[in-house]
Image (cartoon, rainbow, N blue to C red; front, side, top):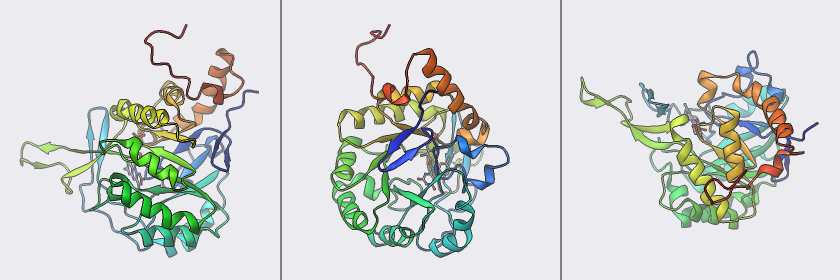
Length: 309
Ligand SMILES: Cc1cc2nc3c(=O)[nH]c(=O)nc-3n(C[C@H](O)[C@H](O)[C@H](O)COP(=O)(O)O)c2cc1C
């Protein structure tokens, strides 16, 4: 049997396929159409200390090869999450990573500290990269802010801390370096790209927030480039690749440039069965390529065009 398990910090994932925050609810919503055993982990919708209503509608718009969204981090808040969501999450047959957001360093720390004692929470994805709220990318674009955040959050939990990076920066490797140097166990990238769409009839925006986050197949080349640049920085922690994955081949490209796991996001809306197919397809591919483990593929990228036989 080909080994497709992978390791993210202290977490062993049965498969390298994770579902991305905001695109898969809290896991159980998909349980009638997806066998959740196929997932390495579920990442929950972003969670803040207090509940958030999100942005006013319209909040999504389909684009060529993708979509724009400006949900605005709508969520039920920390205490309602603990009483209402945790009992469902405990029953999932896969690992749970809670995606955390905050307006301040203190808010991130409060969520992580509170959930540190909740056994079904395997770890955290620290979302420093939401383009759809005011100051949502502050911690992903200012190295000093990122350092302050990590210094406050790292001591409050021993659980796996994965930091989710933004592509909306000049040098993604710089922020990655700061997160890694200050205790991140893993990095996930990318969050959405800041974009917009115009309605010619009204000459106004297609979404009420004016700008939104672009995701889906159209962002894959940007996401691959980001993973490649962060992998090249050799930070010694795992990278989880996210952005536009809609087939095994897409996921394999991320492994080759240095990701040890991937997240599937927008594809869950138009092909939720992909996540069911991926583990079997990956095993078959590894067998054909005579790889005993998917880990043998990670970071095998070569910069010379056409060099692999
Ligand atoms: C409707 C929607 C809601 C999202 N909500 C969140 C969120 O709450 N927190 C977060 O970190 N990322 C959120 N994301 C970003 C995704 O997790 C992912 O990083 C991004 O969509 C790129 O991956 P994809 O191209 O496979 O969708 C959201 C994406 C979409 C499309």
